[in-house]
Length: 487
Image (cartoon, rainbow, N blue to C red; front, side, top):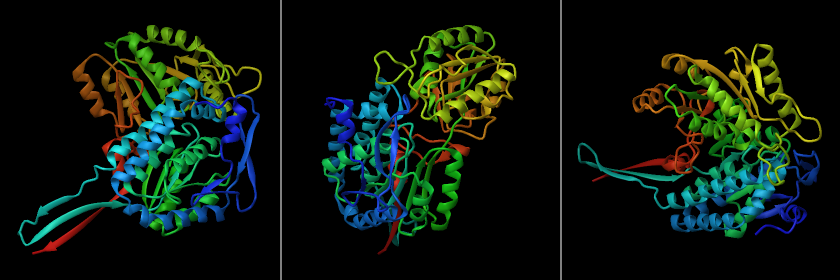
């Protein structure tokens, strides 16, 4: 149930580090503020973890690893199922907490709780379905046995844009596989992860299995953990630039690594598409999470025969959205995470307009407090504009036109990123051709959302490697051991 007031909710969230089953102050005694992006107000102060705290968290994870790996799959499954049920029961609290620290409207925050909780339910089911293999060697002199075992202690670094779901997407399979974790949430949105740690403790997850270190010194705290030979896996969701640095750091210990990095998603509307369905899909692909998602549609390629209709209808939908503080009734679009993020988005819009694009709706920073930016539709955008080459991470939809299938596939693939692409068409043969030709880890056909706990989420090229969710998700936390038995 929701707390009576926002004040009571914030007071209920632990403000300390969670290490070895204990809530601790930072070893340095330092704290840092968590801000409301809608007003700039300080919500609270929380512990600012140090290098020593990171080391203590890894010590706790290492100490718990052997015993946790021996816990039966059924018991691990039941813990995840309990956590799932508790999380669903506390939807309103977690939704409000995310809205306060990240800015997304309450309706979207509730959606994230439902989505994030599903990772606990999915991996509760996968925990009891980890299989090995038995085979007879070709010469029949040996029996070949393969078994799956937990990788070992994991460092999970999560982003600010989905403060709950990006945590459950990593913690869920780690628990299911028998791995312990050190979680370092983004300093912009640490409260949701601290609340989740409290929930997992209450659900019965043993001390040291999940540890949370909040800090404003991310690289300083993470670096020694990554360099420690006892760590066996690194999983990160965030920017490509940071991901590259982490991969380089992980090389010394040859860590198992999974990276979910940046995106530059093309949204392709063919001449035979249902335009109204494409507009509805575009609203989901562009405006989910205020556009602050790696899966957000970043470049709109619309066939010249339907471009005017699509742009007009999209602009009407975008212009009809209400911008404001996410806790207020009727608000569709909350603030961006920081003032710098808003300024960066606006700079992309200004660059496009200077290059010849036209803002059909939006395009100006509103006055007043908060990091707000209006939903914006740009038309006649030249392919050389920065907005087509860089991840926008905001509510801006740049549109250009195309003539042929080959032309648009080539344009869509002309990026270093390869996370997701969206295609709208009623031609089934084209669905197969284009899906196979697109250099992306995921393709959404006639839909604006592809994320699903039952599906393998991940990209190619500079969007990273490894998969989260689906049957493949737990494999990222398991090693394969072969045992040869001579007869």
